[in-house]
Image (cartoon, rainbow, N blue to C red; front, side, top):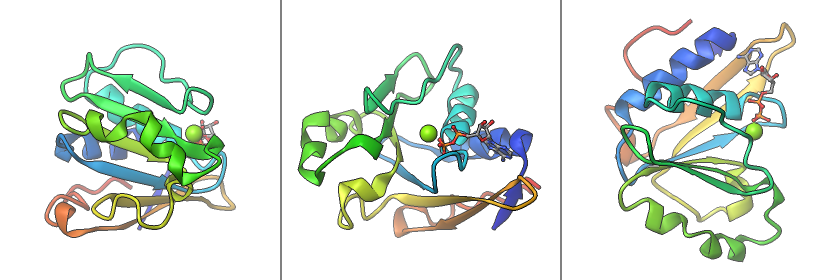
Length: 149
Ligand SMILES: Nc1ncnc2c1ncn2[C@@H]1O[C@H](COP(=O)(O)OP(=O)(O)O)[C@@H](O)[C@H]1O
Ligand SMILES: [Mg+2]
């Protein structure tokens, strides 16, 4: 577990960007306002994205392809049924890029078994606790060796 202030979140995003590959899925859990989109901004900045990273709550998926690795940023908060996932074309985008998903729970329990699962929890003093569950596909890649706190 790491306890991160906002600048440390950008560093955590950069550390994730360093090890991210095409085909990877990162599931970002945590309540509204936990900092999921903030972490995605850190990843995208480290991959060379310049400009805004809106919360894709209404669009559901926002692709970025002017980055060193194409990234799709999804926010499934407004998904009403896991069956809607297929219409989003996320699997196609994984062929040459990575997928960062907020509210992955909306896709159902069985979705993305090889996703790196990151969870953010606000702490009383304001920082965020970041915890993770690492599947086989991510062994040796997460957590990174550098100290972020
Ligand atoms: N590590 C942090 N420490 C303190 N505040 C943070 C941290 N990460 C994000 N925030 C703030 O929390 C708010 C919500 O962040 P956001 O990334 O939009 O959350 P989410 O996507 O989980 O709903 C923003 O105002 C952001 O500046
Ligand atoms: Mg968000």
